[in-house]
Image 1 (cartoon, rainbow, N blue to C red):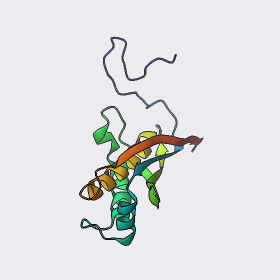
Image 2 (image 1 turned 90 degrees about the horizontal axis):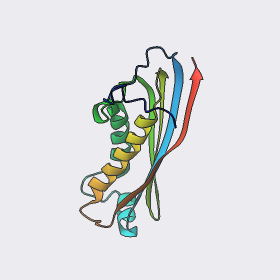
Image 3 (image 1 turned 90 degrees about the vertical axis):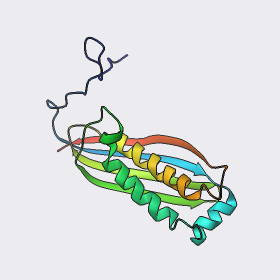
Image 4 (image 1 turned 120 degrees about the horizontal axis):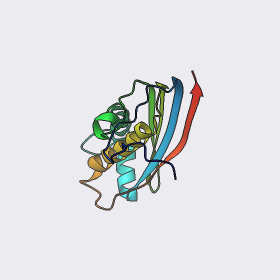
Amino acid sequence: MKDLTHLDKKGRLTMVDVSPKPISHRFAKATGAIALRPETVALVKAGKLAKGNVIAAAELAGIQAAKKTADLIPLCHSLSLTNVLVRVELDDAGAVATAAVKSTGKTGVEMEALVAVSVALLTIYDMCKAVDHTMEITGISLLQKTKKEA
């Protein structure tokens, strides 16, 4: 098993020192889903929810969340993101959110992609909670993570 990198020799939490790492192009893609009743999907598609455009709000919230990941996850590094793309697609069972995040730096962007998906789905939950009490967020996972020399 690999050593836990967020612990020092005395077992205290510490931020990983990435200063010796070379700068590289980083990419991560994550996904997740929210189950919605068919009636709720119809309301979202028709734009009839009182809180507004659910899909646009969720996608924007996901982008904002990716940019704030270091504020939410204590040992994450603050990153300069070069691109964040969040897409929410409706289907008969609910919605699927996907986030793709890019950066040029010394550490990966998988946490930013996972946070983007999580917040996009939570935004859908918030916007639909008045009409759907059966919603369930599932399957949040990392799909891809790459690193290429700069």
